[in-house]
Image (tube, rainbow, N blue to C red; front, side):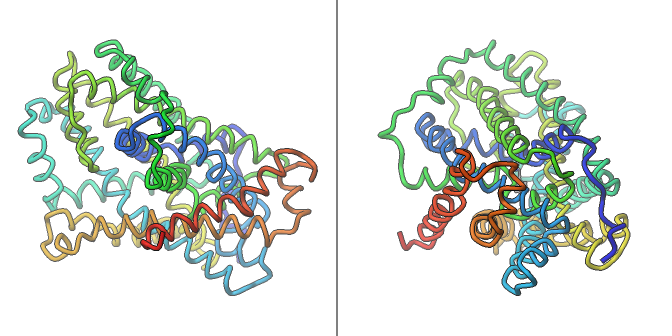
Length: 446
Ligand code: PHE
């Protein structure tokens, strides 16, 4: 293995923290969290989600970074080295990389939609859309093979352009993208609240009515904790491997969880006032971000520009996630096959892009893929099975396989520290049990 193909180290703690935040904040926060929270009745779900984030998400995030920094290699090699060359853990490494390829392949397609909606906002095309036409417009757009491939390719190239530069490229990009994203979300949130009022959104989110908690909702909350923190497919292992010793893993993880949650809540305040203020019914699909909101933007003064900013923001958020999602594959190719970072990036991107074509063409363009619902299937398999299984492996590895000395050293804690006890309890018992519970319920056994 040639160390010179490793992509460097984070320049600062801030750079690392912001890269983690950039990976975490994405379509999961802007689209998925507001929608599943809405579907699950608000407050009670938020409460369960917060518990899931702190007792499953945060501990696994810490565990992933720890494995990465101690392994100091790509996902596969880190598992291999730290486990003493055990075949099972080598399989886990490969499994994580395969999951990242699958998630990225369809994520790039949706990310491409945001680019298209950005361009169409600017050109004024979206301005002519009404309640009646947004759905057919969206349907026609996703059903066009040419357009899907065009935007999917464009987004892949955008990702490559940044990733080719290694950690410094990623660090520079997210340092710029994240604060901008935060600012945009804040501005749109203020516009929404000042136009439609924020009280109903606030009551909806923060009235913790415990009787509304359902088992299904609890499961969704745990599943979303994985997706939104980008854990379970080795991203944080590889990001952690670029983290210099001595920088605090716990601090970085806490910041990532805090910002991820903050942006998700802000996204609710950005959309709910519009929705509650107009008695809109949210449609239960990915298209909501692109259809319902378009109608609302068009009804606002200067809506064309708000819409353009909004979709640009979605593209930014998606970009800082896609550059992280490709990293497990790129670092694997570069280190294991001894190729230069540039070539590894192109190879990795080509594989992901190729697989993504199946998703891109399965929304109407190709009858066979459409009939087979390729997009939905790969999303379901990768997000629900891939990530949760990956998370289970991470928790088990950090909780049982890594020696105690390594755990304490990486965390910079003593074994009687409260945080260490809490973390160990979560990775050993709480998180695995929750994950197994999710799986059994998904299999219909519970
Ligand atoms: N966390 C990102 C989001 O919320 C998506 C993501 C999922 C990134 C899984 C990496 C791994 O959109």
